[in-house]
Each structure stands twice: as structure tokens, then as C-alpha cells.
Image (cartoon, rainbow, N blue to C red; front, side, top):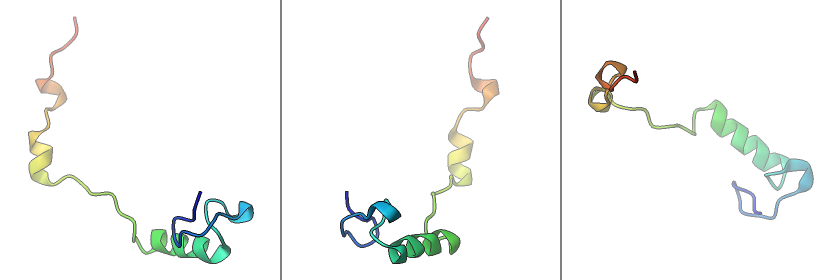
Length: 58
């Protein structure tokens, strides 16, 4: 397994990172919203069926 930040081998004390520095870099990315999950746009939300549109079980 390699460090997701720099690619070096993982250190057991900092797993899944290789060092405290890489762990701090990752934390900094989370805190500054560097990692994001794409949200649905309003158009995509309109295309998904609502609970009222689904057939109901008897």
C-alpha cells in the first residue's frame, strides 16, 4: 500500500499515510474543502421519480 498523498510506502503509525506531514496535508484538504462530492443539479433532481410516481406495494 502506498501513501495517497505522495506515493511512498505507508508507515504503520500514520496509516494510510507515510508521515505526519502527509496526514496533515490530507486534513488541510478536507478543512479547505479541497475534496468535494459533486451535487445534483436542479435539472437532474427533476428527472428522478418521486415516491408518488413509483408503484405502491399492496
